[in-house]
Length: 470
Image (tube, rainbow, N blue to C red):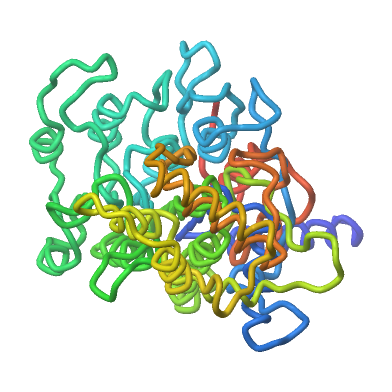
């Protein structure tokens, strides 16, 4: 063999060996639902502002060695919904808004990266901070023509035979898409071999390594975990679910695993244009990422972590025209838009008509308005006018976002707080803004250039040696 050919062969052997060594045994895909680039920026600016620093304090995932951004448009629209966005991240194909892991005609089902991992012998976990049958998590295990087919999506969970599911619960476990009464999903889950685990205390005694569905305690909300800003120490958190999934998937497992983790309520808070709650949800998601990084540090040569989003929500912007930012004042908010609405509504109990000063006291206690934060005359007038209509004249004053119907006084107070914090919102819906992509670990070097959201699962498949054929 000629010397040149020998060198070439040795080089190719070296390269192929290096690639083989980089094949991850453990794959994490973490999705901040609605988390655009500016959500990350707002949170990092906010953290620095708490120490009066004109800089950013990086989140755990924004320090990853590889970072880029991706487009998120769907097959039908420039602005995707979570079903089409989740489908793109799960199966590597575009579909129209509202469809779960199928083509736009809903005649052909796609196989997700999670199924490809299961087929390769890996264990699979699907977790979220909202209901397990919601659009983004469903895209990884279900195939349905409509994202609102919650009961039918639950049936697909059984067929998946995945190893761990975690979230708040299920939205319609006894009613079909056509609103007909149906046999409860929960006995069917158990017949499918799943342990139904309600809360972290029950999880402690669950059989690890066997199939598990972890949900909120019985009697607690099946729709979503509490917003991070409203949580107590005893409430189940996304990081708790993530830890439980890692522990369960790691038990008696030599073949590795694929785990999807969704921070679902970044999107919900952004739909309500609730800046402080949005920041706290990003931080909550970041906490889950930190727990994944702890696992990575024990298996750095065998783990791939991808952090991304399905779309951006709200068109959030940091800065409202001037050169100075005031994001520090968001720390004055202590409850979410949902809890604020409840506290304002409580003033109406027993048919009482509270004074304007009593209402202002609630806004001060919850948001810092009128005390720590001085309002403009315009904002003060808007809030007082709503008070007059709502409390004095007893006119129905509500503000509806995708996942909440809030007291209008609460909604407008939060808008005033955003303005005081130099944060603006383009809408209460999704936008076509780029989504961030961060990567670390074995195969992370594949995530470097601008890409489309459909490229993300394809690159994961390439890195992990999985067959994603759609």
